[in-house]
Image 1 (cartoon, helix red, strand yellow):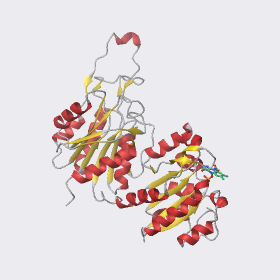
Image 2 (cartoon, helix red, strand yellow):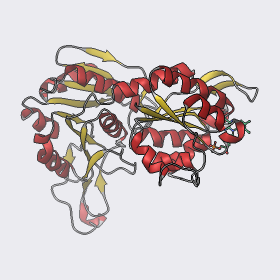
Image 3 (cartoon, protein in one colour):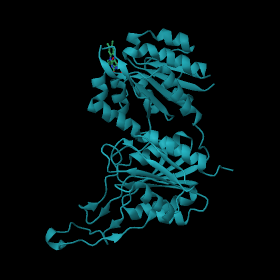
Image 4 (cartoon, helix red, strand yellow):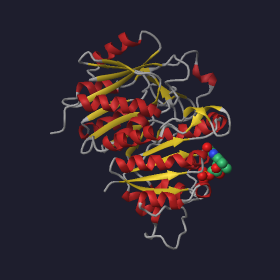
Length: 397
Ligand SMILES: Cc1cc2nc3c(=O)[nH]c(=O)nc-3n(C[C@H](O)[C@H](O)[C@H](O)COP(=O)(O)O)c2cc1C
């Protein structure tokens, strides 16, 4: 029987985790409860053992454990890790790789989808550190059921209440349903910016962070695809489960894409490739006095156009980042580059697009189809993009 690991941390909403457990059981899933030691102080692990029919795991160093290295063995057995409720503390530990109890150690060993339902006081949820932790986890492909607004146990009204358990179960089941929809397929994704060096110190680049490409790669991997991720320079952690090819310049990215193009049936170009580069990168720092008043630039290879020209039966997706006249320009690019789908986003809007966890896009395809999304996290947007690709790309024979 398929198994869900249910991580429970010490929020006052801990009692609602029982409803989450019940919901998954009703849908036919076995549930392995894991409580943090602090959660076990708020509620008895015995309750979760009784409901689940499995011994609740609390301690890492437990003489009675059935497996030799339980966190590794269990990580292989499960299909999904759901953490509900997740405290600010467990989010911080997951985001930074701290492994000082069973649940946080287990998280590091898990190579399956992870769904987190946070619950905390509004100030804690809105704290910049918590926001940064959530952003880090999203970039790694972790999915969230956002907390709801309402009356909080601390007596305040506001955002931070654990989402409705039925909604958490629904999201978990949705993840499991789409689990293998891309299995047996190879996808090639590009992400991040490129850097064009003038000399060892100076370069030309752009504001792309790689977040959108990483979210797309994480989603494709979660759906069972083999993912080849060609990625420009970014300080972010790439999602697990992708074959990572790191590049720096547009020329390197073009070569990496060319070399792997034949392997892929679906190609998604989310990288922001420099349009221009320097004729040559100097081996030593050029002195200001040697530079003159202007610097010559030459065009880079148009990777997307090249891909469009040799795409054959592949499904090709491009991105358009525009500051004005979004739809018209995106449709032009769709045709010019021989794409199947273009994801257009207005990068002039505050708080979304470049270097943000959020985005708002218009999906335009060759059949004249058009879908506009609200502001979404990049992982939510990547789910919409993959749903579209899956329903339009030629099914695997
Ligand atoms: C009664 C009570 C309720 C709490 N509720 C929350 C909560 O809803 N969210 C949260 O992030 N922390 C909450 N805390 C604080 C956490 O329990 C605390 O940060 C703890 O160290 C987290 O440990 P854990 O993440 O290992 O479970 C609460 C503490 C107490 C005593």
